[in-house]
Amino acid sequence: MEVVIGIPAFNEEKNIASIILKLKKITDKIIVCNDGSSDLTGPVAEKMGAIVITHTKNLGYGAAIRSLFEKASDMNADALITFDADGQHRIEDINPVLEPILKNEVDIVIGSRFLGNNGKNVPAYRKAGIKTITSLANISTDIKLTDSQSGFRAYNKRVLKEITPSDQGMGVSTEILIKSSKKGFKIKEVPITILYEGDTSTHHPVSHGISVILSTMKFISIEHPLKFYGIPGIFFLALGLGFIVWTIQIFTITRQVVTNVALIGLASIIVATMLIMTAIMLFSLVNVVRERRSE
Ligand SMILES: Nc1nc2c(ncn2[C@@H]2O[C@H](COP(=O)(O)OP(=O)(O)O)[C@@H](O)[C@H]2O)c(=O)[nH]1
Ligand SMILES: [Mg+2]
Image (spheres, rainbow, N blue to C red):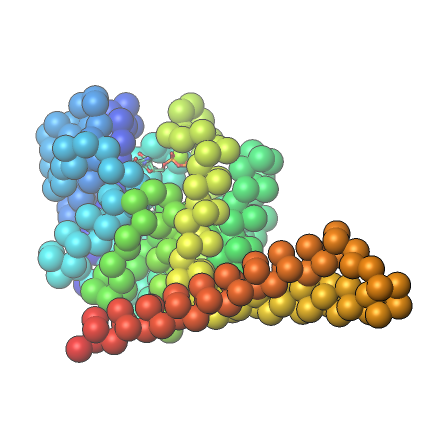
């Protein structure tokens, strides 16, 4: 089995050499996606013998994952492991993450920071953010995950061939899971230990969290437009009709229109119409695009 390790890297000259050196014990097929770094990440990685994909400007984590998928697929890899460049992941966790793929048990393995009893290292505010995003992602995937945001994963060949990540940023982690679940790929989590020493984050946690939540909602809405817009649409329709009926009832008794009640009714019906139209239009659009793609 040809195993490739892919490392997304943005300004990681401090860590990249030692990581590549350690990973060499596992495979000599190491790809680094140097995503517009302004430091020596690219030259250092190349010197260490990695295959380097260069983005001339910073496109984001998701764009790097996409480049790694494409390169691994071109190399005809049987498995791709994604591994962070900042030294937070441990080399000794690679075997457990890879094993279910080698045994052909599942298609994707996620190295979870929370499975078992090992969430202790994760700062509380990060834990809260990751949990929120993961519960959002769980709406759309069949299995109940504990860590949808881990960058430490293994993918088999089928996933590399069939999934094309499109999110440019950190939202790619949930995007891949939502698309994979739709295709019926099997996903499993195994516990890993995450290290928090030194500089471990590129982005501010708040903007990072918000952008991932928005992106996850986008992918859920595309995968399940009828549910995503239709259910709130029906809710607002019922609410609006309720207020209109109420307005009429008051009118028949008092011959007066209570404007506030009537306005809430009208506004709800307008919102409902918009949501229901969005649901139908998006549903049709997504299906037309899918049909064209499979022609
Ligand atoms: N290619 C690329 N990689 C990035 C970017 N931002 C972060 N990374 C890499 O993605 C990995 C995880 O990023 P990090 O900021 O540590 O995420 P966190 O630990 O979840 O906060 C590291 O290897 C980073 O070098 C980016 O804009 N482009
Ligand atoms: Mg990190």
